[in-house]
Image (cartoon, rainbow, N blue to C red; front, top):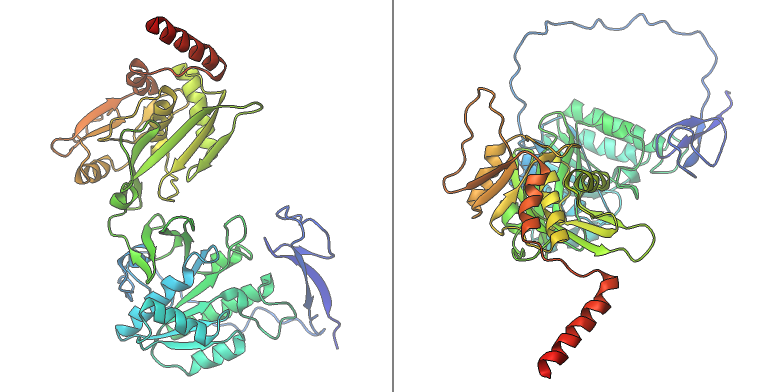
Length: 485
């Protein structure tokens, strides 16, 4: 009998190591190696590559009908998926614990089942009674949904083989499924990879849509090797802050749709509710007469989104100034501060800078540079920006304002929500058609960041520095005494 060998696999990147060590050489993480037992192959004659079935090659030119879709009845989820679930596809959904992954999938599964599709929900983390209690709270307990609590891969595969006309299967979660032929704990790299491959093979063979729920690490990435994301057809991340009621469903990979679409939901007592107009919700609590605030006309996929950007500057209390950012790239903020200091002669280096994207949304596009710069300049000069104006544009290292995509779509969204002005990059005549702006919307086109700073600096109200405040207070008291005398 062949002797089993031992190897150590990194649970973060999947790198193999012959012996245990504290640090993984593949990804640099510490204490991520787990021991696995590998059965050695029995010595024998090596099989040749012959004997296989011939693969048929076809011409590149051709036409295929678009794949059929199973709609969930939730417009925001269907938008991210590209129109609904595709039969035979595998979708991976990740997110922080308690963010709402199981909630949205249970709601979607119930709606698909009510539409007449055979839908199965397999829970590996919760008992059946726990899932029933959640369904009762969500108001979907009456849906004809097949429910099971199992974690053995052999039992799950055998049960799915006996089912007929299954349209959707949800596995919550893939980290809890285990295969008894592997001598490793559930959730390890080998278990996750093998179980996901077997479930995906069965989904494509039986032509049903499979949804896998995945855990995330403390960095926010999906736990396990990156090969898990390569094995699936779509990867969705459920984002949001527990302090906010908003939840963002974002696609980072989609073989059957766009990868830059988002779905916006609101967490309520009865589950997740769709937000058809997220711009109005993000701006619901905005106050337009406060310095350090600017409205950004952004774009998430094909959807325009207006969001408030808030900036706060305060004198540093010693040491190096702080740069705290929520919802934006901290490196891009440092670059923008350097451009304002170097190209616009603004003194911001001795201030603590705090930047926040209101509503919990994370912005990734460079078009937010101009809105962030407007919020920073407004906070530095203590002069509010125009409450009825939106900003968008990319800022270069020399201070130039660069063009961004979908300008007309951003302007139409701003006009729809009642904004009357927009600051945007200066158009360059290239022989194309003219910009079609909504009627009544004033456009302020600028070519350099200094054009943005000038109106704020003209009406700036300077605050006394901390070391000058005692002198300013003494001078004010002396003036008051003279008036009394």
